[in-house]
Length: 303
Image: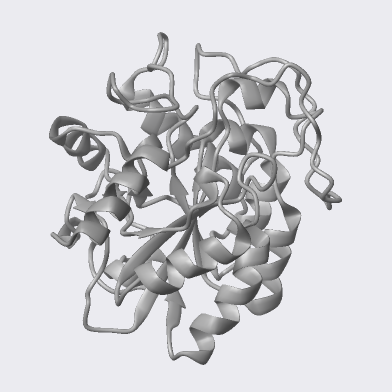
């Protein structure tokens, strides 16, 4: 493996979703003006005794973005899609650690400019949600669920680490289990939007083959990345742009974040350049489902 690709792989592994777990003593709210992103008013964490409640989903689920092949034919773990087409899957992690959930009424945890940019440019994207994010911002998740260009996916419930050495995470703690990290998030997304998710991303990309098999047994396929954005390391706008333009190739899955500054700075500014750059250079921006050939929503229990 070329040294440059090895370095990129190590950076992705170490920096993915790399929020500092030390809560700031006096968080500074983002200067970004929020739109209709009011967090849930509940001040306490959801009860662990049952799957958290959410609003009843729409009577008619939104149509699938790109029906192609059965999900069971997709490999259990994917860092990229086919290298034959000039396609790139744009993905966002919507992180919500427990300490972020507790601070959601004081600190800006979403950059609304990113969402407005995706909507304005009709850019397809896959958003990997922590369940706590859906609990904190149910109206926003419903908005995603009603957008035919947005694919919703699972990023665990609370961004706990699945391996003992996973950086910038804390271990999964009782009453949560690896299984409920998957199923609780799937349940709240389904209840809010009527959408059944097909894909899962491990916090920090940390996993073993056993955990990949568990996720598959629950009907979801695990998604990694082969194109590093750099926002987790606080890179400048120009460095993020250069990383993506130079590091992404045909079939790449690029990962960045919806959270915005101060946790993930310069994402909006980089996307302002990258989205038109991709289109001008003949790239097709797609969801993970379209890249890998995902189906229409599957019946419960299949996979």
